[in-house]
Image (tube, rainbow, N blue to C red):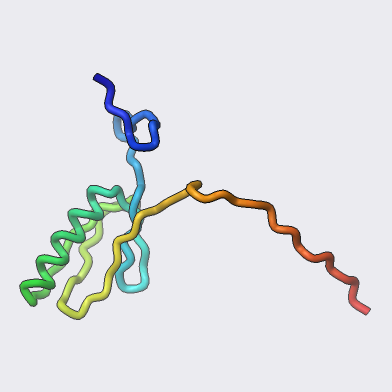
Length: 99
């Protein structure tokens, strides 16, 4: 039995990772796998629900960071979607020489 992804690409092999999510926290953006981003979000949501403050680990493309999560912390986890829209060339207006 062969496992196929939704977009019918071959699953990654070995240490190859699919960077599918961005975690936005304190003005920084961290590129992570969907699994790591969802684990971070679940842990952060739990900390916020308990009204506590914790350093929550995030494994991302650049390594590991401990991100401070408090009930007042704003963060977002978003999916990276590339090549899913049709792009058309944009015609730029001709520039006029300076007089």
